Length: 318
Image 1 (cartoon, helix red, strand yellow):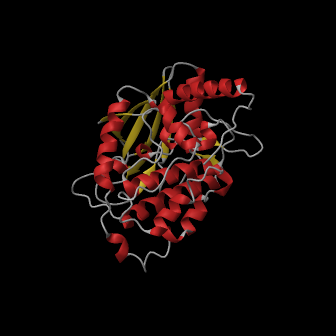
Image 2 (cartoon, helix red, strand yellow):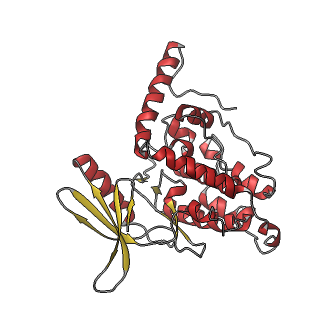
Image 3 (cartoon, helix red, strand yellow):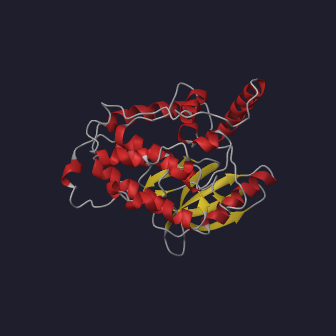
């Protein structure tokens, strides 16, 4: 089995002594910068031990490659699972998925680690039948040190928080914005900020240009919409934390509301269309190239604002 990964290829393998099935991610490195980035991923993963985060077992280094040996999960990407014609996605299912994502993010943030690349393709199902998920791909993750004001210029445009687009300081709420985008997509099948191109997408993010599509959210509870609304907030200090998400009414007190939440959502067909379009796009663009697009956008915005006498990074939210 051979699947393309962000920086390499993932192979299914077996440990000889135990017979344990594992996944070996072989990453080709072209220089010290590449090597340091992969070593950062290894360093981050060595600090993780949580049921909803992919586990690193070992790592090997050669002259041209670095190999990460990780636990193997066979369920595939979460969105692939839920668009299957035999799967009936309900709001209760979405809650189960989002609880696990928030549990994983809470643990990650407790370790002072930012994921910074949370998106649907980085959430895998453990099996083809159960609802357990794991967050993967820590290639862009960073150790968060509050005194070191961290800025980043990478990520996938439609999941970027406003502070990333504006090249401002990032912190724990940066990940929580992405949690809000994923929740919105699971509930509706729509990507809230997706435009016709990257510039339009990022302008939608900067201007908080989103709403609850009436048809797509017809069967969605008010608690779910409140949950999303408390995450997709431009001011990062106002967003729910991972712990706040877990305590939010939508993710708690399920027993009394379980029957009402078993209505099938309308998001599956829209998600099928989204995945088809997304995979066509991926044939032409590599996700990591987003850094170059972001940089060009910042340069254009900075030049325009300088010509108008403004300060780079200024923007209005509506």
